[in-house]
Image (cartoon, rainbow, N blue to C red):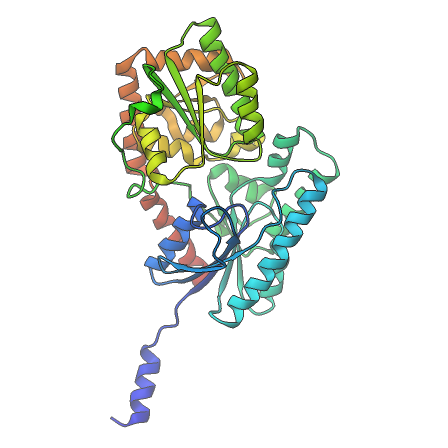
Length: 409
């Protein structure tokens, strides 16, 4: 065989890697669990993946190659609070995202641009790169208009702009990835997406990471029981409602044998800590802040039950919270308010309090703590549901099927 024939054969056998660029603004990678799970799953199956994200605590490097993923991070000027601050934050982020996307475009290249919200402001990049034949995929993490309304309890001009940006994002997208059926219905009805171009890939815990750890009694603060929460500390998460529940349990039910541990950070962390202090609850509520994975898993493993006090509103009713499934993966019974997607995820692993009824929420906590057999049944049900249906290994198959369609259709 001649040299030219050998080259020709090699060219025929060469398969160009599928290249994906993911842009996320909400959290740095790898701390955004969903984006990191997607990126590493694609890498394991032969995709070349680059991610653009903000810098953050323990994620300050401008470039990092981690688990086969090329990570490009940009600075963030502030955490937005108010319309002007949002303009500064999002404007700065969009500038850096475009600049870094050009860097990826001219170096590693990409065939698909996957944009993760919030915010719904990456459609201009989608429009730009579609001029070069790239596919634009909208990974729909949050419903931004409902998120805004849940945070500020109003609509108005800014809310109307968010509705417009969401519409333009859906219209620009070639495909959309929804986190649940509620989001899929919204993409079809409000976003006018063709049903066959909307894929459901749920948030699911990685069971190789979320594993039971030995309990550490110190987290119970010398009390008999412990209740844990993990997540963002922000207004829509309902932690003010949870503090009302703690006050009810201590003062009206006389239950001084329960320690609450609230893990996480967020824009309202200081105000929630201050609220606990002003209510005289500091001895009953611990705030360790954002912690590393081993500490987080130890805290959750030590807990007797876990809570999801998300404030009942349109955003939380239609959204899937990964913390619920992480609780279930550790075999913990749950108390939460009765919300559509929360109930779908947990089913019999949770008891459901009446919406915003903090006393009923507290009574549900006591029902579980005072009935060990019920707690064990609920925990076992949740663990089995995660293992057989909700774990990331099951969602990964759906992600890969979606990307097969994205690249071949």
